[in-house]
Length: 237
Image 1 (cartoon, rainbow, N blue to C red):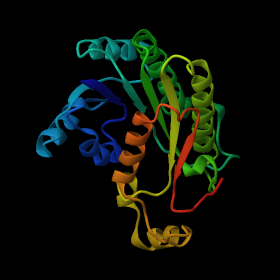
Image 2: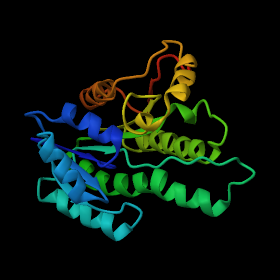
Image 3: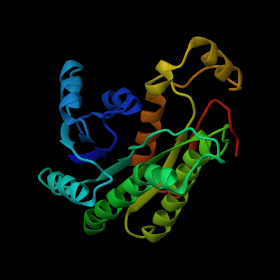
Image 4: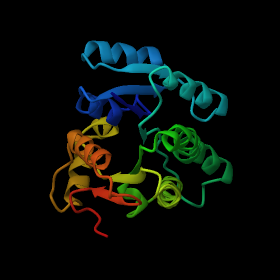
């Protein structure tokens, strides 16, 4: 049985896709800062998962997380999903604010990827999938910091793909648009309708479509260094 480690397990998208990632072939490992809350959620929704509490901005806690994964045989698939949103006009954005955002949205993925690669290289197999956003390609007002963090993540994944191309390891990114889960549930209806009008398909995505993309990237040994776009046509490369 191979292990999937999903970071940011307490977020709305992670909770929505977790049920679709469990199978007889994969054990689901989740990490979040609020581990007790996530354990309760998984119990209430009958999601078979192992859970570890960690702050991924702290190197010592990331190391403890990966030591914990070794008790299950290590990480075969890493999904870098931990992240936070941020809204601020660029003339108000400070370097310190951007640094704090990068710690969560970018450097947490770097820390996890670096440790995951140690075990993956030894096994000769690995899948690293990082979660980005349509905003990295089509920014909205006030998203300069968030755009920068996700753009950095996508560039990093392309570099990882080159470094590991002959090691049985792939590295890819999924950039999704507005999904019917997570933070979208807190947006007032009039704003939701305005957002929907900006999507050519005039509908929000379903979380299981993200899970479908993850499964594809796990199974596809010849797909690496790519960004898969799931956005209903909101942005087209």
